[in-house]
View 1 (cartoon, rainbow, N blue to C red):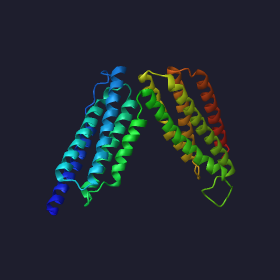
View 2: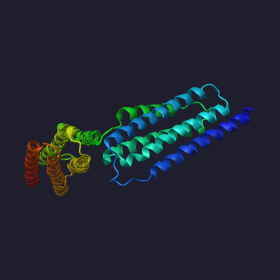
View 3: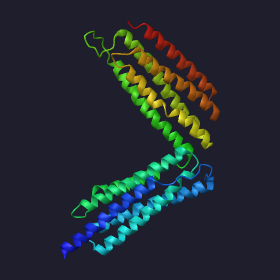
View 4: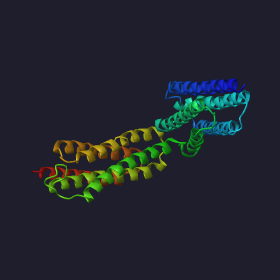
Length: 316
């Protein structure tokens, strides 16, 4: 009967959602392999060949499920295809658990993020079908297909690619902070009655802070270019760890300039950012030909720091 069919379909999709949730939890708890047991380059290539094939299999099963559900399928056909979908998803997640043998924690992180995104999207897809009375393919099916496409086209295959992607991401955050500060500077008008408006002296402090953020953006741009030829994943991990702090430090500098300005907060924020410039520039010299750029960065950063200190002393 129609009622019996609906009851069975509800059961199929409820189990489907539960299986997706369980698989996601198992992946999140997945065991890590000792770092010494790292894949060779041949094994890395094989890993990503299988990884991409598994993503393509999930993509294909999603599309097949969409076509099937648009045709009022039998419960037997639906259960069979859901099982095939889960087999593809299990194969994908099981293979991805080997990511801890990939050379470089940033490459590992990229694969883990991609895997988690697909598992979460599939879970959302399954839950949507479990709660849809008509059992039609919801919009979340398109999200699964798009996630599969994104993973195949954007997931880094080397630690060099992964670290450079992290540099770009950090650079975008720092550029956003710089744009925010520049917007405030361009629209400045002195207003003695507005407690949140910069005074002329505070404006000079903000300009020097902008200089430090600009140096950060330039440093990250140079870093992205220079790391293109670096293959040693351990050195890449090390220098990327130094780089990751820059977005937070830039944000601290920008936030410290908001009126009413606290000289102590500005001093602490700018000194921290200047110190990060120096440390990162030195770290880059250890992994690539960065000596000339390092000298320029440290000199410019020190000059901007001195100018900031002088501007702070001029505050009333």
